[in-house]
Image (cartoon, rainbow, N blue to C red; front, side, top):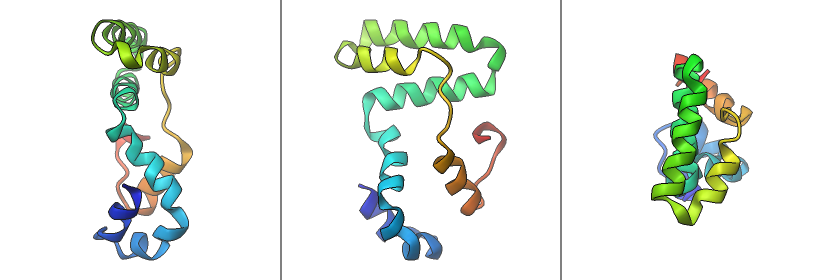
Length: 105
């Protein structure tokens, strides 16, 4: 999936640097194509937007995984033991592409 995204990117820098960065781009995209990573990412975003309520978001995510996503519940539970943080390469790519925003810092 990362190869396609790089090939058709509107950003020339990403098309040029893409072959070197393909593994990282694929890792970023996995958040949206893996059920467990999608839920972990959504809960992580909520925790970053409202840090005072992070414990409640983590509890909700673990309960939702157990009730609705049993196939991935162990992976989700492991990912929600503490508020998920964005990987450094994610924030680096966003800075490189000029896509910085408060929720992603």
